[in-house]
Image (spheres, rainbow, N blue to C red):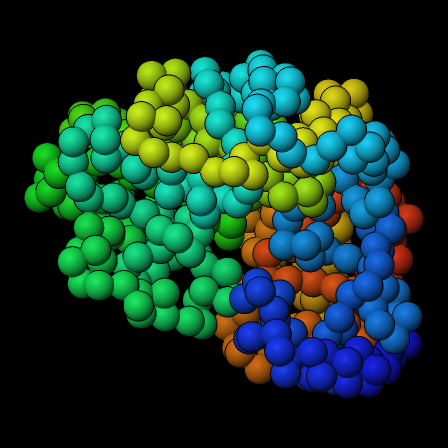
Length: 406
């Protein structure tokens, strides 16, 4: 099996004349010319099709938001029904409060909730709330918290489009000085920063490291204790981990209570929505400090979110992620070892990191996977539409890819 993607790339190269950077999302920019699909036009269940009509079993899932699968009837029907009644209004729609109530019942830290469109914006909102609440200036970051607040050189896990770029460029030194990135799991470095600057640290914003997720049990509790001791706020970035390792994300899974948390990917199966939530007093301060967004209460995404929540409650989605993810990644790692391909699959099976010590092997692996109809990313996701037969077919395709590499 080998796919031709010539039409896909020819069309893509024409589009680049007007589309800056080749995509509005850095991590979606195709890099393996004439090998990976440059343009995807359709998805159904766990599969996607490119401009050349090639079919791929998909584990990119739009970089995480497609948690249930493409074109899921229950979710699409909810969006279509709401579309017939209007998209957005000059006053709140009941869905805004209804979805907030559902999230409050499901997510441990969510006393109150507010909606916005992207995770980066939601993180920025929590940072402003934290600075106002503590009357302090400095923010500690762990992992990727979205481009709006990634204001110092990154340390730790980053998406490919961020790790290869320079997010500190374009940021005045006076602003950058207020943001410090610290690595996942290295508590001594966190303790040193708090001992030196604790009186001016407004908050720590933490996103889990995919490859070393299991360290969260010790590390997150330790950071929670540090922030409490120094009067700082603890903000969990659950943009990826929410509705994936648990509905309530890492803070539910590891049993930690942050002051605030941000959710996004996964909560509306691809519709654009994010939520920032936490202690009631903190969230109620948002309007007083001019945090606002015209599209925060857009109804199509809220209708999708309501349908997704119902779907999760009725179908035990999280358990499926863990079971089907374990089936795929354990067997994929075994196949790589059998063919002497130095690929490591680390972290939880619901969102593992595919890692390499050799950059050439990295490229060869992804190219071989694409040529055999498997669409992967550095962090790959299963969705609810992946069934055992899809996993079996994926493993057959990956074995062909490994044989090509060997």
